[in-house]
Length: 375
Image (cartoon, rainbow, N blue to C red):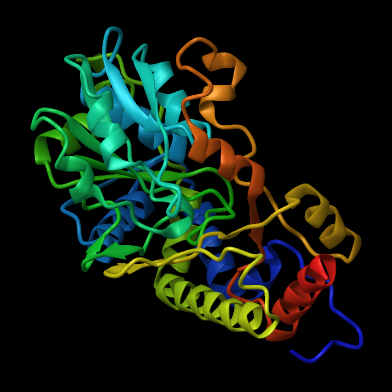
């Protein structure tokens, strides 16, 4: 790999580049909503839901206020509450387990596969009890979990709620994330592959009755104004966010393709740099299409490397430094020594820049800096 005479700075993410490419469409969408003065729900939200149903290939898409609320709403729609258990990986963003706790149910933590860092099917099967009502597989970093393998160890009455917050557009055996479980839950946080200009999210399902219940619960448990058949919450999406997402949605496949191309470039550059025995690259098992919401490598002396990169203007992040079983708010729920794979991942994972507008020179600078650290 040729050395760069003046290595460029490389942010972990630069959303300004994406915005510059769609500015006119976004400003027109915002103006359309401002002119209508309809800011909560309404036609923009309705149309976004129809467009997402077509894009994801699911019967029902229910827009919500955030990815966290998508998880919480799904669990509420399933009637999960005190006395119930929900199995989650111990290695994920906090909302996965936090949403379970907010219903009054108990999150049951399971260790992750050492390669994919997603729920280990054998561990899930061992964790099932008579109180288990659901399992939440996380499609981590943009790769689909093997939901079929998880189902093989589950009683038929146990629901699968996909945490697909990082995986819109990812597939396994031709099926999209969000179509594999009872519910799929997506986040449109600004940094996601499909990001809003604030918080927003989505619930997907092929069950019409559950879709209707989710729509009712997201509006304070009301289908008729001021008449409440259940206690729900305010999980409604803003029309401005829906309008912006409608502008972005047609670009999603192209943005995901560029992330995949960037991942392939990283693989080549790391190979050329002779780092194969030091830097463990993300995997893409057969039959799965990774959309690289994050490009997460595993490295020795992770924190020292991260400081080395920062000193050279290269952004990075750790997803996630503290697994659930070591969080103070979940103290006592599990034996903290029982999750060696999650603990190992928390110590050595590092996310590198992967956004669609990343240049080859920027990627070369990242790999060159990493090579310089280990030599």
